[in-house]
Image 1 (cartoon, rainbow, N blue to C red):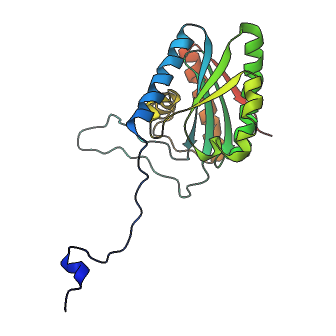
Image 2: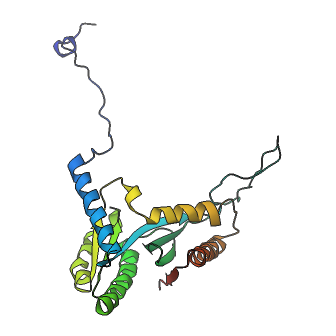
Image 3: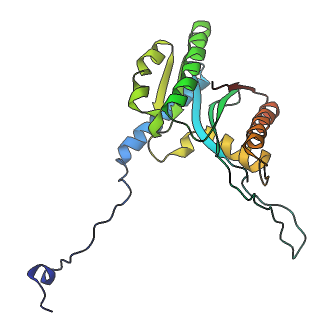
Length: 225
């Protein structure tokens, strides 16, 4: 086989492949982190009310963790025959003070997120009238957080005293509610198998209430119609 001119120059014909998106410039991430640190400072100084939003999912077979067992034995948790549907929780965390959340079967979308955020906007308006503080909610860049249908409400929320702060991509360490979900799964809900989705939901509700009592902060659940 005779090599073509391009092959002689080091070129070969190969299939193109997709790759993850390139991260934004480091200066962008640094600026976002600086803004985030400033928000925390303002919250500590009593200038704003700072909250964190994130979604987490729960299934009939919960996360496995470490457990004591006799030497030479392996402790096992039998999985259910059917996986069932996922229970999703959307939490709004004001560290050490308040934990609001809502539960749905399946996942969240813009419509469900709008209902919960309208609830938060009402709370922000009441808080602004009482204390003079605006409320800032920190959240990631999930598609249903920034959809076009949601953007139409941003100005109205701001008029009510609610502002959104979007984190830089791939920076879960700055969303402090992530730790709450992690501890909830590792401590209160670890290594459990539930009969159905109803049991999963009730276990999540009980676990969130238990963490609130242990941490001495308020818990409130939003009821979706």
